[in-house]
Length: 245
Image (tube, rainbow, N blue to C red; front, side, top):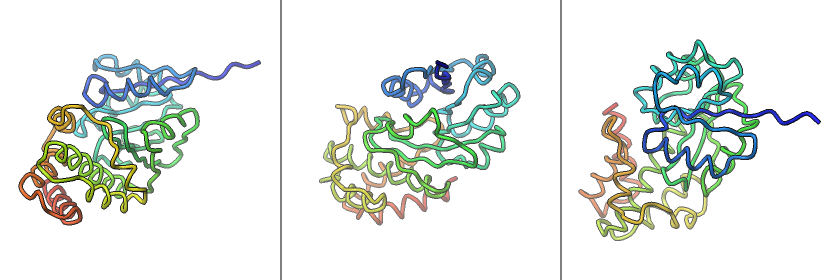
C-alpha cells in the first residue's frame, strides 16, 4: 500500500508572540504525517521554503513582502502561502510569492478565526487548520475587505471582553451581541472566551510593537468613552484606523 504523502509546514516568525502560540496550537491539532517547523532565524528561510508544502507567515505586516521576496527563488514549486499578517492584501502576497495564497486571522487564544482563499489555493492536506484552528469553526470569507473587517470586529470583541473583566466598562455583552450579528453567529459563542487569567496580561498579548495596533485604538476609545454603543465604537475606530494607514 502506498504511504500517505507527508506534509511539511514552516512557520515564519515563530519567535513572535502569535507565531509561538500558533506553533503550539497546530501541534495540538495536526494529524499524523504533518510536520511543523518553526523558522526563527533569517538564514534558515531559504532552506525552509525549499522543503515546505505550506509556508505560514506570522511576521509583522511590514515584513511580509520582504520575507516573500527573499524566499521566492528556492520556494518549493508545490508550496502554498498562508498569511496571518493584518492588512496585507492577497494580491500582494501572491504576486510576491508566485504561489497560491490565502489569508487567515485569529485571536491569539484561538477562540474565533476567519480566512480567505486566493486563486488556486487548496485546503487539501491542510483541512485541520481551516476546520479546527479555533474553538469556533473558522469562517470562510470572500475577499480582503471582508477579512480586514473581521480583524476589526474581533479586535473590538476581545478588547471589550478584557476591559469588562477589569471593570473599565460595565459589561462586554452588548459588544458580543453586536459582533455576533455581523458574523451571523450566536452571541453566546462570543461570550465564553478564553484568554489570560490576568486581564492586564491579556491586553499586552493583543498589542503589537510594529505600529499602533487596531486593538490599542479600541482600548483607548473604550477607556475614554466606556458607555459608547458598540456600533458607534466600531465606526469611529474603523475610520480612525483607515486614515492612519
